Amino acid sequence: HDWLTIRQDARYVTTNSRWTSLLSHASLASPDENARVLYRYPFSLTDNVQIFGLDTALEATFDTGPVAHTFNLGVDYFRDNDSSFYHQVDYADPASYIGLDLFDPVYGTAIPAQPDVAQSLTHIGNTGVYAQDHMKWGAFTFTAGLRWDNDDTLSGYGGFFTQQHANAVTPRA
Image (cartoon, rainbow, N blue to C red; front, side, top):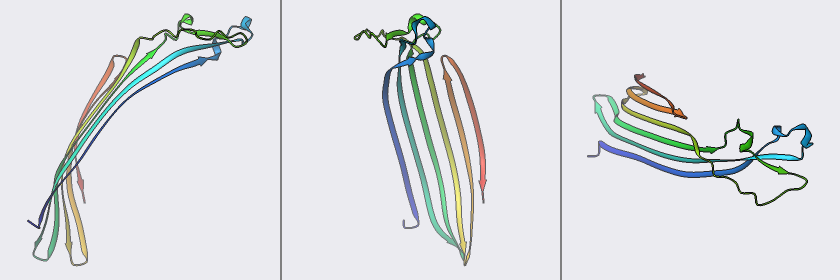
């Protein structure tokens, strides 16, 4: 029918990355080293992200007497799942750092593998239902709508997680 249209928008994104570096910590040098030694430590991050979104709507155009209507009814769905793993030294342990004498460097020092010491997670979910009517009568226009959202979030770092849940109705005029 010419007066009825359905539309759907979808989005999917996934990324996986790994960042590895050898960082330095200048404040560890002792006074007897005369700032000759640069202390280094390995750090890496593995990050995985998945995002999915879907928006489906029905649009109807019709007249009720002298008033022209464009009415939308739809539902949208969104999920975002992120997880990160940190591989790092025990910063409180001076033996975790790798010294490099800046005036007599020894190259090729093995960099020890680091354990997974922390994990960061974020899971976000949203589902929304909406209705909106755009009305036109001569030179006058009016838009009225209503939207309901349901949100869930789980996030945390290093084994400590928080969960939040909320839903709300939002009018529009």
